[in-house]
Amino acid sequence: VNVVEALQEFWQMKQTRGADLRNGALVVYEMVPSNSPPYVCYLTLPGGSCFGSFQFCPTKAEARRSAAKIALMNSVFNEHPSRRITEEFIEKSVAEALASFNGNREEADNPNTGIGAFRFMLESNKGKSMLEFQELMTVFQLLHWNGSLKAMRERQCSRQEVLAHYSHRALDDDIRSQMGMDWVSREQSSPGALSRELAATERELEE
Image (cartoon, rainbow, N blue to C red; front, side, top):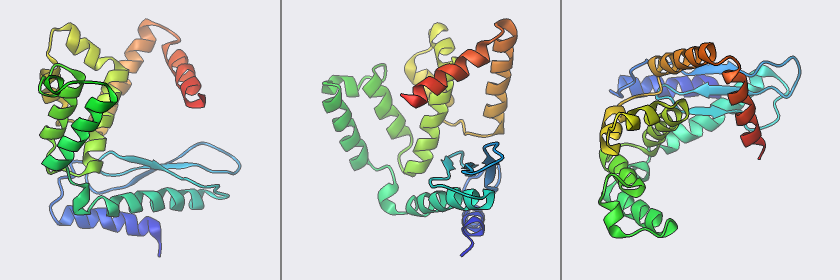
């Protein structure tokens, strides 16, 4: 089985069956620049989820297959009914969050608290798959890292308003372009900003 072709066919089939793929069904591959093994490949699924090669790959083709393999397994597993966000799943997840942070029930019902925002996010995505929810959470992580969420808070936007505003954003070319332009502007106003951010990120990855 050609796993690269199988992954592409899987997403084309989803699109044919009516899946809302705003950027089409194309799976995008990107190699980490290298002149010698091991080669590393990342891929982005049509919804925005990213997966990478997970084993020692002596060739670039093997790296593509490795990334496609893990992405295909996740894509297929994600179709199982148990991967859908249900009321039962929401209650269980909120209860676990309350236990982890020693919170109380009132916090879960208040959208201005962290746990309340988490519940609001889950409720807003009821019926969606865990992969779709993961993609949305990645959007918010990127917006937090980029400073967009902080800017909205400074404009006195409530947490619920922020969530409602961004909850329909996808990991698409528009958001990538927007963030890219933000960082270009940041580098122009503060030379070296990109280098500092990359260095900080590398330190975090090593920890």
